[in-house]
Image (cartoon, rainbow, N blue to C red):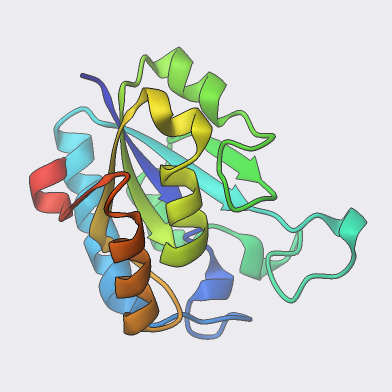
Length: 171
């Protein structure tokens, strides 16, 4: 199996000082950095996924193109500087993006999903119809959202469709 670590929406607007800071971001960031290091050491492919708001549908409260808040967090970029970046405008990272082509080009068969907004972009990507051909695992310790309870509810809800594992055992 060829694994890929998907790093979804680890962007400045979700961190302290951003337009929509989430719960537990410092701890999540540290665990994501550790997961990237582990993945790199084991030859796991890494893919950044960056949400950019669609200006055609009107102003967005965050992730507006060209703003510092829309940029991938500097520590995440530094940990995986050569990883490809897939830009998306929807919760499902496969929808109208280059993700599937990128995975095919890399020969990926297993997805390790990490990132921001557990109940939204993380779960929607993990249960996407396009993801059904992959062995999908959500790295439960490398995700976060607006609160702990919402994070746990989202993980429980998706647990019947995908595997849930800590990064240390999945990578």
